[in-house]
Image (cartoon, rainbow, N blue to C red):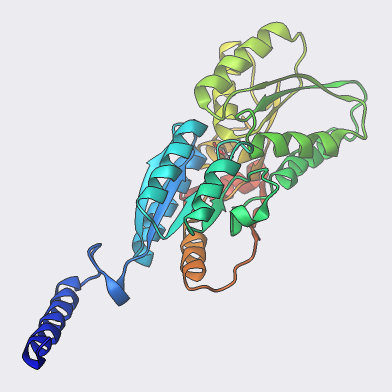
Length: 327
Ligand code: GYE
């Protein structure tokens, strides 16, 4: 190559670089090179609950704020859809894959595919049961066993002086999901020392209002005496409240209700005396997730497990928290 041709090439390349910088301006998705915008593929469980809606909003807003391009996919509560989404993220060569696994088992194959493609995976909200811990870099979310335990501990206190049997019906979350498995076992553990507590019926309501209502209707028909409802999330509790009222009973009085999540609609039901205790589960994971994404991409080490901090609500606390509750 002649000196002149080489010089022209260099000049051309410089112009190209300058143009790219110039048009990159506010950091649009076309940015390349040093200003390359991080791309995250996120596979969400679905839109089954108020908690989930708040979680989606948090992740979308935080990505925007962090200047991260988010490829968002809603799996409509189906594992096969999540597997498809993850495969498509791999094909698109995203920088990081994050997802909230609808159920715990069955992820090894697709996670191995991501690993082979050198795309780090971050779990948010729900866990997987994979033995191979190299399949994901970090898990950000709540301790669901602890949440179930808090619900059970409250019950033990509430019925400390009760003599006879306490009949409990349980609305379980999505079958095979980490929060359903763990909230069930944490609760069972907390009440197991006292034989007066009897879980007389337990069935999945899939974390939705509609199913919560339907299953509670069936419980009310089949169970002659129900003292307590333990719901694995607020939406099912809110559906069940409708069923209880339609059956001519008073939720919170005739049937005590303990639930999990702490969404606004539940806090407002609490302020009306319809839910007696609520264990908080924090859906606002967006900022922490984007932070993790940046660190992982920068090659920094990140904790394998990040637990969300959360509290509990009595009706008084719910009433006080209501005016400022965002979700
Ligand atoms: O409690 C429920 C949602 O995985 C923690 O999923 C989440 C749960 C949450 O549908 O409302």
